[in-house]
Length: 460
Image (cartoon, rainbow, N blue to C red; front, side, top):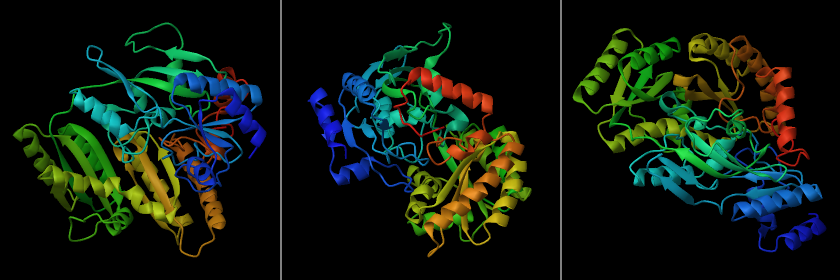
C-alpha cells in the first residue's frame, strides 16, 4: 500500500470513510470473477455526491486510478481492482431520493439494490420492470453501467429503456445532469445514453431517475420439456403468436442437473435435453385456456413432450427457480462464462453452429447453457473438470472463445449481451465492433476522462 498517498487522501477529505484492512481490500477489490487477485490501494465509501466529486478531483490531482464499485455481481471483471486503484464503493448511497406521481419516476442513489427499487415502486402502486436473479445484491448503479437486461427483456427491454435521467460525476470531476427526466428532449447528443453501458469508464453515476410503469396483469408460468434444439424457436413462435409474453427462457438438461443438485425440485419424472419456462398474461380464463391450447398444439407437433402450468404463486416460484438458480448452482465450480447474443431471427442457425463448435472443442468438459432465448441472448458455462489445472482450463476456454467469436461474426452477433466487456472480454471487442467504432469510443472516453483515471484497463 502507498501509505503517503492514502495519508494525502485522508488529509484532503477527513470526513471520508476509508477502509484498508486486508479483508476489506479483498472483499471490495473483486466481483464474481475470481481470475485476478484483488490489490486495491484502499476502499472509499462516500456518502454524498459531493464526496464523490471531491474524490475524483483528488484522484486526478494525484494520478490515482478509480474503480467504481456497486454490488460487484458482475461476471466480466469490470469491478476488479488489481493494480493499486482506489475502489469507490457506492453502498452507502442507497436511498430513494424522490418520487414524482405525475411523471411516474423514482429518483434513487446508485447504491440501492435492485430489489429495494422493486419494493419502492410497488409501494407506490407501480413497478420498475427490469429484473434478474441477482436482484437482492446487485445495485442500480452497476445495472446502469452494464445496461443490464435479465428475464423480462422480451416485454420491457433493457435498463436503458427505463432511465429517464442521470446525475453523474465525470472522470474530470464535473457534475452533469443528463436529460432531467424529460420524455422529449431534442437538444443534441443524449449524453445519458453514453453513460449507460459505459462500465464506469466515463465517470460515476450519483443519482438516477427511473421510469416506472403499471404492474402487469396476473400471470401464469409454464414449463415445457423440449425434445430437440430445433423445437426451441418453434415453441417460442407458437407462444409469442398466441400469448402475451413477459418472459421466455430456456435451459439444458445439464443446467437442470446442477440446479436440482443445488436444491431445486424437478417437476418431471424423466429428463429432456431442453426446457423452456415462459410467463404470460393470464388475467382472464380465455388466456389460460389459450395457454393449454398452445401446449396441445406444440405437443401434437412433437415440439414438446411434457409440460407443467403453475397452479399457485409458490409453484410459479418453484418453476422459476429452475432457471434463476442456475448461476448460483454453478458458482462453486468457477465456470468459464460466455454471454452472447444474436438477432432473434438468427437464433436457429446460430444454435446449430454453436452446438457443433462446443461439441467439437469441448468433448470432455461439462458445457451448461441457458438464457433469454426470446431476445437472442445465451449464456454458456464451461465447468472445469476436477483436477484440471485452472490456468490451463482458462487458456483452453479462451482458445475456444476465439472460435466462438468467428461464429458470432457470421451471424452478426455480440460477444457480450449484458455482462459488459470488463477485463474478461477485452480481447474479443473487435469481433463485435469495428476498428472505427473502437477509435471513436476511445475518443469519447478521453473527452470525459482526459487523465484516464476511471476504471483503467477495462473495456479497451
